[in-house]
Image 1 (cartoon, rainbow over the protein chains, first blue to last red):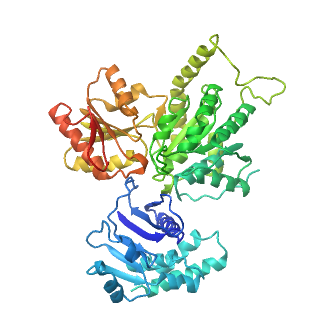
Image 2 (cartoon, chains in turn cyan, purple):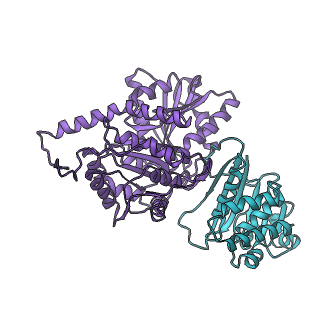
Image 3 (cartoon, rainbow over the protein chains, first blue to last red):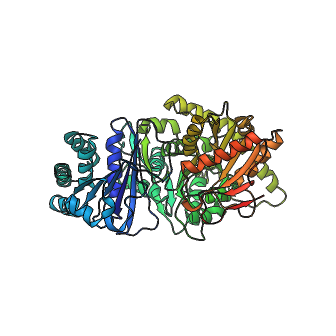
Length: 185
Length: 405
């Protein structure tokens, strides 16, 4: 079972991102789960969303998770949220930041010694989509780091997921995914 | 004529979308609703389907849940298919009208997304609302995941509208853990689903002016008792119809449902009995316990009302220790599952060790480790041949342990 935890602010698209990823993965015949913790969170409040992926039907409904991947799509949450909670050996972190990996780890020492990747999803989404919606670029970065799907397959699958949107928005998301895929370090 | 909705063989839907799609495919004529978290997306999705031309029907926004169910009662009495959705406080406000619906023998379908009852206010999942309405004279169907929420919502129309039943039906799903958790769902295509559900058959329609009838009349001691007895009789007789509908659904989809749900009970020494998503998490825990040599199984109610008295005792067979896990504040007694299982087992001459666990209130996480701990305790009791733990325990609770008896 592959498990992913997203750290986001309500309104940044983590739930949409988690559901989009679930849609793409389900099309390959695997079983998926996508959920989030809501509470009475207002737009801007820190929140978490989750994915599970498996070859078998997913029966586990606990919220508790030891994630294989932690995706941080808001730069501030690296410092204010407990992004290393319930980590395990080999947990990989993909973090939105304008800093280099070295600068990031220096600014948040608890990431020292962990497998950390950085990508500026905020900048990428502002440049391509025109709004700070860092979810689709994060998926591009996840594809590169995890090797889950190659870029072209994933883009084609996401086009289907986004098919209800105007072509302009689909194209902008494709550009965002591609840039994050190429820029994640 | 409603437009055909393009569906993939596998959709990724949360429980709310699954229920909304089932309402759409069932061609509900009237949805009267007052949205409430976490069931809001059911009626929100439905109203969007309607606005986009995928349903021939009417959506009535009302000013409270009392009015929502009243609208459904009026529509159903008038002779059309009616359904709605609610949760928690909204369900509580509906309660008066729930009894009207069942007493008037109106086959309304209510999709309930289970949520805690205030105070303190809490939007998360537990079974307080389900327990509040369990004696309201409705058939209660229980789902554990979005696929089942979809399947059972379709089947609810067939069961409640059957001329041998004519009773309203609730379909329960867990708030957030099912309603907001997207998972693989295999839907029927629109024409298959419509064919399965069939046309609504009006009975004693109020709008049939050639044969005028009165609904909701008063009966005092002359007829009230006979009416309630007949209502109970027909509810108890609905088992056959429920089985028939489950059987026909299996022929169409391959998906099998029974009055009682069991997992690895053939050789089980210890069993968890629970409702909702916990049933599936308990399967994970049972498999882990079996790797350690503990013969663990899971039992649940697919149909909570009518109460499958014989089937639940048969399912529990000769297990040595049972955990009745209630996700609702017991309010000064044991949990409902403990009381009802205890009565059924005793009446059938079975004397397993029966423990009551109160858990998960207000959405408190129910972890696999917690369920394993329940099995560990059961196993200890089974080996000792006596209850080694208090009969009622609160688990997953912070602070000092709380237990009784």
